[in-house]
Length: 175
Length: 240
Image (tube, rainbow over all chains, first blue to last red):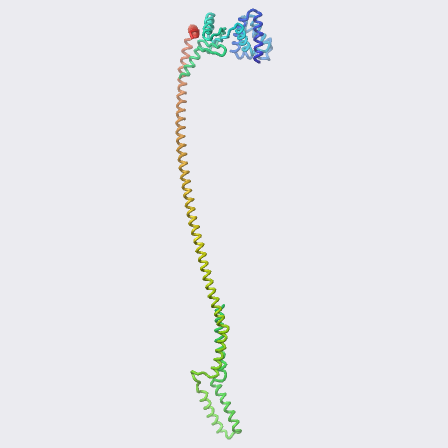
């Protein structure tokens, strides 16, 4: 799907979320669902398989999300899957987050970590990143076991890597 | 041809000479011829002088005496030195005829033959000289060509030797260059192999060390350690 269409889908999602007065939470839940889809090839193929009836794919989405997200988020994801955009959910979610942050004059900081960050940690991390980059950021935590420990932050094209994985890689290269 | 003509002329002259002599001898100069001729001549005179026979005994006696006289006359030998006049005449005539023939025909022919022979010999000698000169010239030319050929052969051999020497030198230089390149390449290959081996060894050591480090880290990265790493990261970013 073209980038232009991705943006239009993202804008539509944001418009619905704003109408529900729950934009930030929808963005966060959509972002997390997109990361879950990204980590599962079977789920991604299932949601983008046109041979599976749309109702069945929507049912799969609702069963997966359950009560872990707002009804608005569930309805929006179900709508995207029914429209045949299940394979583009990651790109749409990323675009939604970027557009939402931009509307609040902020940049998105994707934070890869083995464990969840507390709210306090996210606030202090956002402050540290603003101090380092000069940008107001919104933290989007992505659970990634491969980082082994520490954090990896990506803000647009800038990457700040403080993971144990990278330290071990540097140690390997040092030999 | 001229030799045979000369022999034929001499044979003709001898035949003419003895033939003429034979004619003179056949004129009745043998003993029997002389007796017969003189007898008949005397008997003819007697028959003419007496006319008849006066007695048989007297006639026989007379014949016997006449025969003795005739025989004595005929037996008397001619001069051993001076031939008969007729022989001198015939011999001289024949000699003169023969001499005339020889002077008229023989000598010019012989002289012509001799002259032609001399001219031919001189011509042959000239031709032989010319042939000798030509042969000498050809020999000189051959010798010159042989010398040129020898010189050319020597030059070709020298050029071939120089080319062979040059080729040998080139090949030697090339071989030395190839050997140097092979040595350099072998050294490079050896160094590369050594580096690869060292790299492999280092990678293997790194795998072992890093693997051990990963296992140690994973074993010690509990929630508290993770929180501590996160806090360190936040503090480090904030302090930059």
